[in-house]
Image (cartoon, rainbow over all chains, first blue to last red):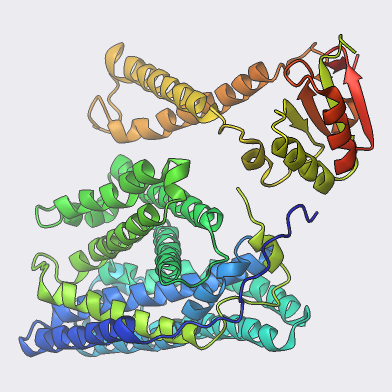
Length: 408
Length: 178
């Protein structure tokens, strides 16, 4: 029903030029990050450096994977609203192979330097004759072993990367060829990808993050990580979109699309809290020592303020700031909340990772900030570079017109 | 014609109805309301309809649910007969969250539905009333208050120019399905 087709004068072939301040800032950020990591390794704080590298490497891979998930979700649900802004998650998905390789290198380096996963990588833990023998960890040997860890990491991230890359590629191909073939192919691939992704991301987070404290386990942990990944992915898409719009690009994306992104950010922040609380309350209530060990560590004076701050930023802030309809439609408000949530989920990962690695030698300083800036710079450089390579709208997307007329 | 309360333009096509809205507005004729068989994007903005106040009702019912849910738990678990479950404090706040949350959501949802029904006169035993029976089928209806806009000939011609297939002069506001 074409009730108002009066605004088809957009230039869908317009391309972003990645140059000037944006490029310089991202390159400077990479240099700062490398300097911070080198400083951390040089001063002998290997454990803390690797903990930070794992944090940002995982965050980076998660955000890119969320981009791929976003693209696949829009294809499978045959969504129209998002067609005009798809180039942003597509660029994020295209960067996933690089992010995966970086995370693999960090994990390998962490295991090699005995800084990460040392709760289960020491062979003495599995030897009944050794004084270090740990019956609990030894009982998990079928899952927690170094070859198994790497096979799963390569299999999962390799799989996500291939799907992510192909899904983005298909859309770029659509620009040249037109027609519905690429869309139909993308639909089928996305359906397969979502099934694989849904079943394997919890295991991926068990391996990458939960195994840092190998005695503890929680089946909620996978969904908790998925929620964090999805909220941060949506936040990154929002930040890139608003900055592009402020730069005068993507005129066809308006406050209605922003409103939808805001609803996703709001809704999945609540979902994150729901999963977080489900995990917390059952452990608090049943009070079994092997389960409470996780929260016990996080309620030590070292971590307790941060633990609560994470709830304030990731739950209360989006709840109160985004509940209003108008707030979700304002660029500056959305930009602020998206950046706040990105910081909040950095803190979320920090609370997941640090007590299992540096334990009470927690730090927040040059190393943490520098590594975060470095990875943010790397992400910006790779993603914006990718965005600049293609037109900013998939001009032959079958639902592009629906996206232009989107109104909520 | 003096008894005419509403002039009702009946359109077969939503684009033509939207065009009709523009024409009437260009001639400073106020539109009483529009009735369409399916939602039309952008029509609220065009008619200048104020945002719904339903969220306010939702907030009030939600708050009521929160208070009721929490009071129930507090009275039964902590006040009237303090329960000791697993050595937890007698006021175990984390345990209260799921029930309080559920009651909040329940009253919020039921309250919103009740408010909506009350506001729209939709309840059992009430025959629905509309300004034109075909507005729920295949026609797009534009209603103009005939007492506020006295130049009926102008309204008629504008509606027909925009593509109205039928213009009615209704002496009663509603027709009932009865």
